[in-house]
Every structure is written in structure tokens, then in C-alpha cells.
Length: 149
Image (tube, rainbow, N blue to C red; front, side):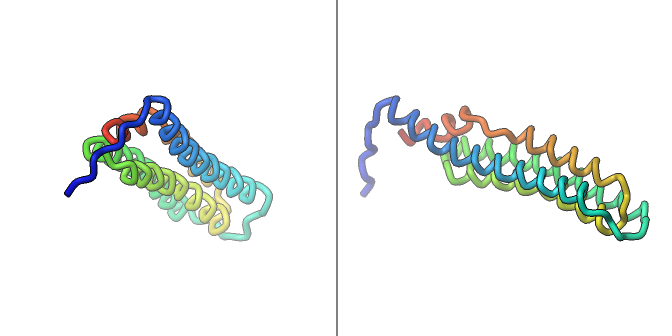
């Protein structure tokens, strides 16, 4: 037997959306900060690796692919979360998008320490752009939460 849905006011609904939004925003800020910390590490700690342009370009390419994949995957997952009205699926979409974008910075850090190449900066730029493109949107939460309230 199904439980009757609770009727809540629009103000209560918006408060729930705002609380969930703050959680996603805090995660976004934390991961963007970790990208910045990794970049600072790369700037402050000199590399002792030997030059290998092929490896640098491969890591840069992998970083590009992870950021691109993060954008496409998040878009598909957000669409599905809205269709199914699942807040948890929306949170997963954002977290996966954030993590894949951050991985480009990790590949840049690996490039810096393994090869000493200057290409690592491009990986950090891609990671930062990916994170900026993943900035959380309240409209997504409203769309997912609409029928729940």
C-alpha cells in the first residue's frame, strides 16, 4: 500500500532545494580547490623526471578525454535524473562530472612529476574549465524535486 504524499508549501520545497544545492556547491568548491592545490604543488615542487614528449601528450590527451566524457556523461545523467525524478541520481551525475574533471588535473600533476614537461599546465586549464562548466544549477534540483514536493 502506498503512503499518501505529504503536501508541503512552496517555501518548504524551496528550502529543501536550497539545502541540497548547498551540499553540491560545497562539493564543487572542494574539488575546485583540490585542483588549485595540485596546481600549486606542481608550481612549487620541481620535477626530477626525464623529458618524454610522447608521454606528456598522451597524458594531456587522456585528460582531455576525461573532461569531455565528464560533460557528456553528466548531461545524460542529469536528463535521466529529471525524467525519473531521482535526487540521488542527480547528485551522482554531479559527483561523477566533478571527479572526471578533477582527474585531468591529476594527469597534469603526473605529467609534471614524471616528465618535467610544461604541458601539464594545459591539463590544469582543462580541469578548471571542466569544473567551471559543471557549476551546480538550482534549476536541475528544482526539476528533479518538483514531483517530490
